[in-house]
Image (cartoon, rainbow, N blue to C red; front, side, top):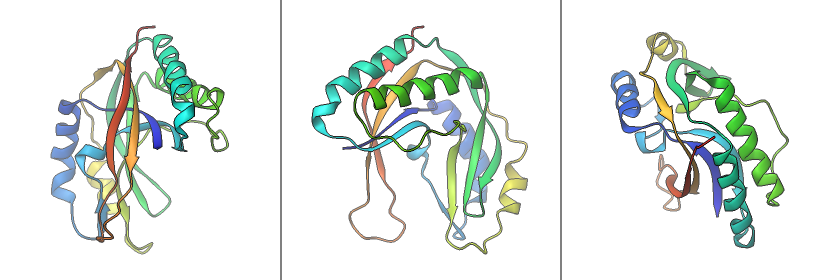
Length: 184
């Protein structure tokens, strides 16, 4: 099973962002669907079934050690010249701590994780099909975006179902496998 730990924005935050993003959608970028909008905390890749019980227990402990915190969608940025993203504002230290705990939980459960890097909160909006597509107009249009704050109160473990149809532009489907309340 291909998994990642995530914070999922609530429907109201997704609707606010969609209102800002929808007028910008064109065929020069491959846009992610609203159902795919999330903050990845720890990408685990393929996880063996026998590891799951320990992973679930460790992620549950990570959630119980974390107090709920405020977050909002904020601004816009990019990764290189290929990915357009929205950032986060609010209690970013708490978000980073939850990401660290999710990463540690996966490692301790025996999930081989990529080399550890400092966590950068982002939600991917679109990817460029060509390096020559300028992202500047999109960045300018979303630069002042400020979403309404919400309370992050859940750590989710999400399964990524990769496209299998071969249809160009088909995107992964995500489903929440488990979720734990933050209770600090």
